[in-house]
Image (cartoon, rainbow, N blue to C red; front, top):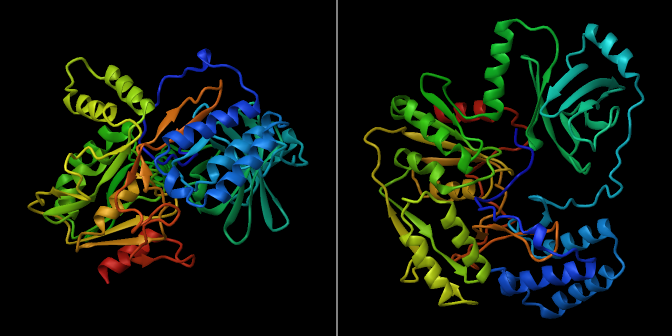
Length: 467
């Protein structure tokens, strides 16, 4: 289950923590500032008001002189947050530092006798009261007044203790959920008669515990796949759904197989719904096999220019070493040579400096007549670029709400910036459509907005397509 929205396809460089010094907060902030000021491709565009930036920076430097570790994390986060770039953040072990809404790291405990609850809840008639499981957690849900409280019975993570409140469910269909760092996230939930509780905005699916027949277990497995997994399904005689919850590298084979196995149905269905809700992106290779079914004869791809830094060169060199010995490296070698010859400058790897590249597409001989793509606020990065391309097709409609908004600066890498246990995720390019067409923190806009009154997006899309 996907617990956090990662926004790009990036290469994870090898950790150098063992070789790095332990820094105090002042040193850590200084190294972070230097890294951003010299290697972040959006730095000059986002610090045009030098007076404001320098004043902000100097205040953080003063605070860092007396900050403990927890306060220091918030200072570092405030610095990267200044740039309002979803692809730029500071953290540790591949995880960004939390917002600090709950700096004590504590959540309330629920007044309950766990043994008594587990004995009595077996006979509960309420559809939500009971014992539930999700990845890493066993959770009890008990009604208190009009609300429901979800509390820890057992957890794999040592930071969570029995009886601590994990979430609350409210009568209006909304929830309040404590993330791993115990900061709070709000969203909406849905209950499925199969015995599944799905918290949409945090992509958490809980399964009610209790005796089940094989038929019930099969129904649960199928419903979980619909909520979380990759699937293709013909839902009416005219309309099919293709669910793609991620474009990350590890799912490339699964996506290709899914499309290939259902090729005949995709070609012959009148309407196709592509569900990208919650898709955090990954690689643009993930959707290549879909393009002939939804696009015209060519696509206008926006160009990008990369900031030539030694760090980026080192990362490309490291990436080369991970490739199979027979894999071609001519393109990578050419890019490395270009970067080395232009250190500190922006370079366009296309060679001719075009603002756009025209990609030819051979449309499939048979394909859906109409395509709807569903997207929400958790649709990000390369999934957003798919939306960007799809809007060029005459037969595609985007439906939902604006996407995440993380597409102006990309190809991000984890970078160790000189202090043990700290990392920064930093993009390496800026899109050449800037500043005319920004997407960061705005998102790709839908053609048809689905407001909060629309509870079932799939059903709405089917009615729209078949009306």
